[in-house]
Image (cartoon, rainbow, N blue to C red; front, top):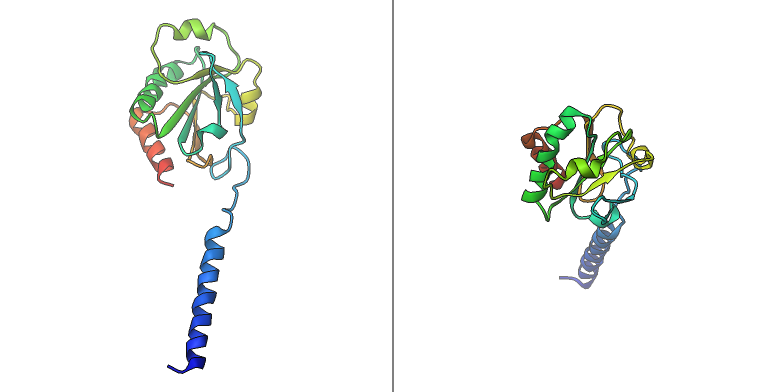
Length: 174
């Protein structure tokens, strides 16, 4: 092979390698901040009833499921066991948070004492978290985030366990 051809091939290979390295190392495009599907949910930290805190930022790498509910909402309390089952079956892949939205008309801690749910509950007394989550007045509402904190689902209405699992699986595979 002629030296000029060999040099040209080496230069082309080097240019291709540099292009690949640049493309691979470019920062990922950041999704717009918001609560709509395809948007990055704004970070928040909330104190839970058990004394722990739930920080959205600390959940990166897991699918996050946020359930907005109320003790006075029949469909809400009927679907709470679905979220508990999800947390029990996927403890390392999913993080579940239940948020009692305003108005808070009963002592949520007393209400929950009759159950043995294994996921965190928070009470949004002042509506600040509901504002961040753009909570609907229709309850229950479920918000699901992929492993990067991007909203993949945000809808009011009760979910069966099967539907919930399908949505979480879809978010995990993004």
